[in-house]
Length: 233
Ligand code: ADP
Image 1 (cartoon, rainbow, N blue to C red):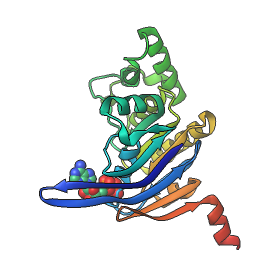
Image 2 (image 1 turned 90 degrees about the horizontal axis):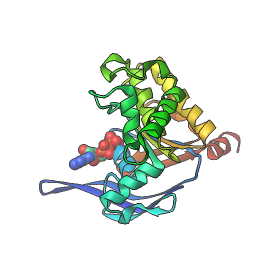
Image 3 (image 1 turned 30 degrees about the horizontal axis):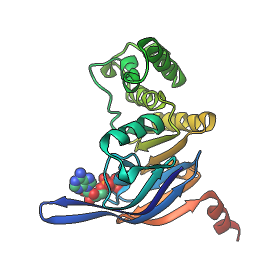
């Protein structure tokens, strides 16, 4: 479960202060499938980063699976991400000098013994359909395959939440569709909450809840139920 209460976030650029999140309150239940949409600069990535404890907030409260993210020090928020959250980025963010398998092993290195790390990473790569690409460097993989490696890396710690920042933004539409199907399959089979940022209306329409940001505020929060209400009432 993700809870945000009256979250405020600003960045200082020189003497200027830019308010990026303005009084954002939000609850995302376990096993949700949510998209965050809105124009460029509306605060979508910042919202995702604050949930993952990657960006401190100025005011308000954030809870992830009961943990108080807003009071966490860096080491605690790293632990939170390790135990609860998998991240997927538009640019894949793989280590270019490491193979697919090594990239997926990375988050586990401090937690498990080497045999278990390897077994888990292999299993995660199988899960995303890449058992035949384990020893490839990212440069030898297609964009879609690189994103699958990144999803395996997000999945390997058994998170309850996957935060995906425009996961299809660097992919052609067919490959993007396959990546969304994979995330949906993970959502269905592992009961993982997926929160994804997208500019693609078709992808947003597939999610069961669509949150639209405008100037750092929640402009619209559209669930399947109220879409139904709007259509039939
Ligand atoms: P979106 O994901 O909707 O495009 P962002 O959350 O990336 O929006 O950015 C919202 C605003 O915050 C933008 O005006 C952006 O320039 C600003 N911003 C984001 N990150 C930083 C940063 N590290 N330092 C200063 N300003 C930032």
